[in-house]
Image (cartoon, rainbow, N blue to C red; front, side, top):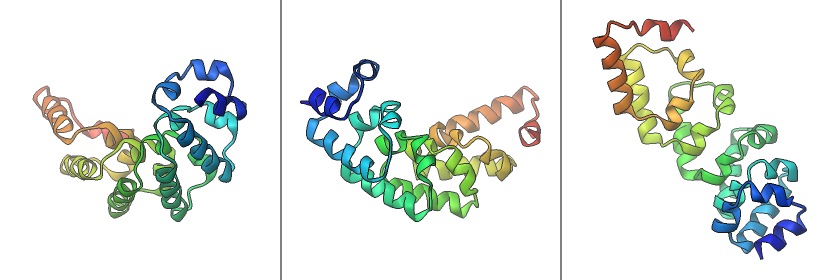
Length: 179
């Protein structure tokens, strides 16, 4: 059934072969619903083919909620298309929490849009902890904005351990703010 849905949408077999999780994890009905949501947003088939995991892992209702949150932030369709994983793995409620944390820290919208992974994979509570560690170490907001992936995938405890190792080895952290 999944192959039939994908074939009807013109998704190339080679593309499916490169992302077999769409067959293993997906459900034909859900995939059809996701494709309808993405069609309504004008997201092109070619863009979807680059990230079939959105069909394998996403949920149409959650994707609609995420898109609504991103609409409220005036996030452009082209920006979302560059990181469809935010629709596959993100949760609207968590994304709202993350955006609130980033807003409180005055992280620029442009920086967030360059790294939507922070919304797809990050957790607001952990991001707050990481930002606290970075603040305590004097890392500037501008430096953080250049590397938001640290917030998406990092752990505060690990980052603290790294800073301690740098200190023990007399490696100056000030260089982080100069790049």
